[in-house]
Length: 229
Image 1 (tube, rainbow, N blue to C red):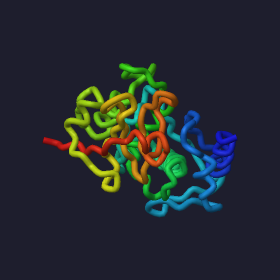
Image 2: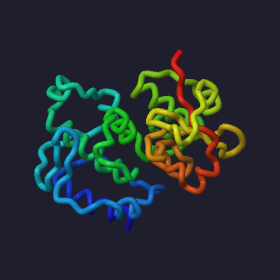
Image 3: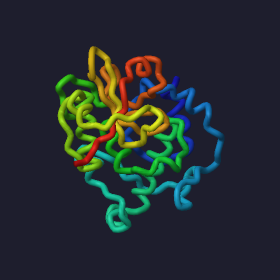
Image 4: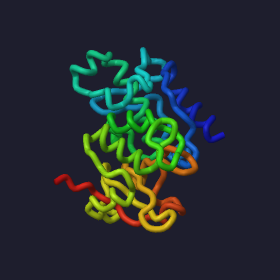
């Protein structure tokens, strides 16, 4: 029912919009959606708004057009189709603001959320680093490389070593979060804000979880901020 509820809400607002979305399994959609206020239209940054039925063509992410291929200057959006790009941005803003209980306007790093969307629900595979299966540190490494142009070590332990340690209350988007899931530093995710992080989960693949979840709150070790030499 959780999945049907989300489809119904999104379908009502984005009538005619197409986007590839895989099932979210470990975020409580009903809890988050229950906090949303009813609305006839959603107003976004710079007076962009979504009105039911007012949708044209939609840009769709594929493996042939990964998130890293898109940039968001006026020139690039004009070349790709400005309206289509804005519509997909708005769709992602709505989806991820619902998943993370955040204001729609706070979702502004579109390169990051395109990347997350393109890897969404890719299954976990220890030692994996592609779309057939990817582990936690390979995922954070790819994200940092493709979205931010940063090269980091391959394993969670090595990524932890190069980071400046950050307390939970000081975490910001772009920090890493580290966990002890089987002894020592054994799991890593990428912090998004409002206690949420994206990671490759053993059970759910690439997904979003919260530091306040019982399991992750018990396993959390520290945040980490990459120090660029």
